[in-house]
Image 1 (cartoon, helix red, strand yellow):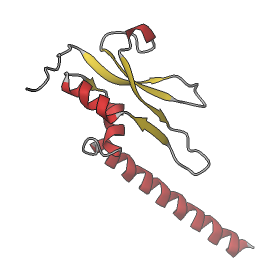
Image 2: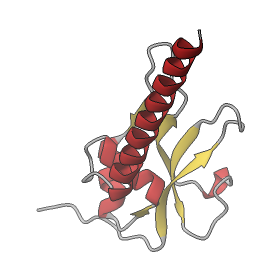
Image 3: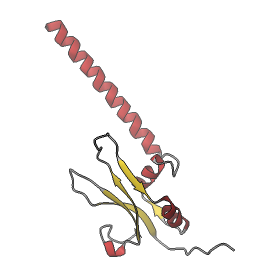
Image 4: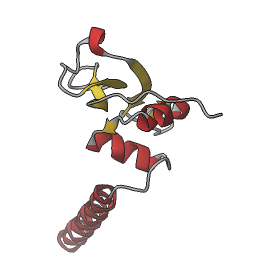
Length: 128
């Protein structure tokens, strides 16, 4: 016989900034939707961490407890857009459409920057 999983109302899995502006660090917490995100007493469980600053190997570190995330999603918890994008990049959810849009914008920005550098270098060669 399968175990009965209790259903909770208005729970959300959200990312909470615990670092500072120039050194962000996020905790992924399960909390009631209408509670203050920084209220540790309202946190039911911490299910992961996310460090968006690249380390020496140019990696952004993510630690997720996927079993507990599955459990909380099974009990009716929702996820915020930022957590949904993160879980999509990790392969837990389908990739969020904003991830594709952001990647497209980054490619266009890099192409424009490369083109600008190419025109600047050709101008310097012509004058030099």
